[in-house]
Length: 193
Image (cartoon, rainbow, N blue to C red; front, side, top):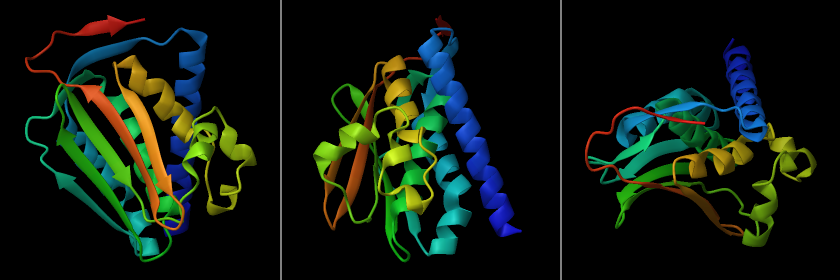
């Protein structure tokens, strides 16, 4: 039953990712922008992946100072970004490893880092992973990747003025960082087309 539930969750993520990429590439994506509290989104995403992490004995935790980290974005899109990164951290971390989400205030941005303790990949190779569907030919495919997850992260972050970077060291793990502009006052709803 647990495996069926995990497969259903994976299928849902795949469908959401494919729809996001399709809308993004067609130029027909409409997104409502509002003020989003990052701590709520990150904690929900960690909770959503906790059962899968427990099966691998992977510890998920959230660190940093999340007080009042608010960004102008669409909550569902931010959840999709964070969920894809946490999903990858759980998937590629060996049993008994750790995935960590770190939120921090930077000068004018909120930084969301997702770190894992997987075997790591040469940083130069990660640019290929951030390409559309590159996982279809990637050597980590056997670990259960679905393909478009990092591509979705790459496409969604700039929609809200954000950036995505990755650092990875062999035998140590990888850190994906998404930086999004902070919102200091409540914003009205905007529509991006």
